[in-house]
Length: 568
Image 1 (cartoon, rainbow, N blue to C red):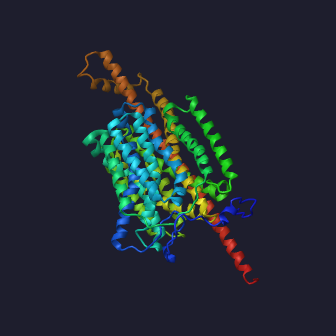
Image 2 (tube, rainbow, N blue to C red):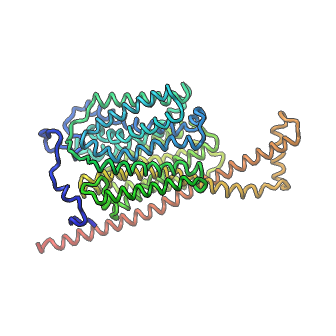
Image 3 (spheres, helix red, strand yellow):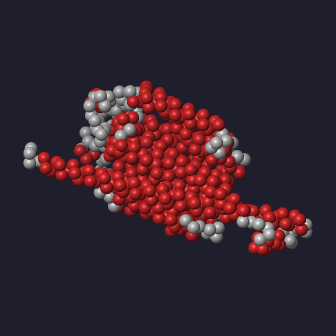
């Protein structure tokens, strides 16, 4: 599968050319050299400086995701305060994803040529400025702009968090530090749910944006004061890169728009969603055609079409899809039952603990031999959590979800580091220029996986709610003694405030219909949990099959090499 002939690798000529250095290369010792252009060098640091690097990594990693998490956690409150329709409110998280995914297309090359710190300073400064401006201007359009700029800033903070965390330990612990660095952004969501009630109590939605701006300014100060060690800067940006970006960015934005608006406006009732998809396919086709025939492609199309890369994309997408069992399934059910951020604070404290435990456990046990088992164990945890959540009732409350959601958080905190390590190693086998493609592929699978999971599960839940609602209503015959008694009880609730028997009867029927709709929603969420469990089981079986087949192939290749050794 790895053909290296010029016919299959038109970029091989450029790879052989010497890179054009933009700055003099310091006389590093061997253990200090950067892994690749754009990465920081690894000099020795005293313990207190290493601790400072770890603190900055934590700060910038949380900053990248916390703003969007605060908006997602408090979307109903923000929607009501700004007077938005559900369709308008759906654009807020979508704007973040649109910009975040496409920004990663240029971040890697920018950091190779100019350094990531410059990009971070620009992004964080713009993020803080626009967020503060939103406090003065307000309005729906300004809220969209804030979310878009936060997506731009997050594209750099996630990488910054990883690079700063790598400086917190000697180079021999690179793998373990990488797991912690890439996992920091995952604790933003539970933190947002824990902090939201206090922030809203003190100043409604304005405090959310004020807190965002403060975090951005603190991260900017930290990045400026504690700089990353210098790296290698080479000339890599070409004019065709901007053409590819101009084609891919709107295409990804259109796909995200369809996923964000499909459920709210309904998939088959809004023709312009189909037009967006058609336009996205055309733009992506043109972009990939250009990249396929470039000498120095930004997107390595040949690598993307290889079997291992396709399997990696499917696996990364499905893992993120399965985490929707928490973000949509459990949270959606509790919201349907009337639970708000105040009531769900203990649950998200458990989720935060599970995420941290998963990150730490993955880091401690991380090694080339444990990468695959960690991912398989994460998938198993998702399946077990879905099985535990199946059979929920309208009497369940946040504390009933502690065990299942701890398992989901544990798996989510565990899989990210090993998955990134697998992808980076596969990309580096073909050259450092393939890392750009991997970064974009990872951002798209993770962002679109989560967005697709929410869109697909919400659509499935609504369909099942209609099915269960029809079945329940078919059994609500007023002539049935049990139903008649329930209606009388419902009417008695309004007896003290309403003297009209006919109106009380209508209110009792309405109350019973509301209860039946609630129960239908609970049954539909149980179907969502069942679907997540089935997907997890099938995914685990497929992953085991691929892992066993790969192990057998490697064993045969090793045996063949061993048999050929005496002949040499």
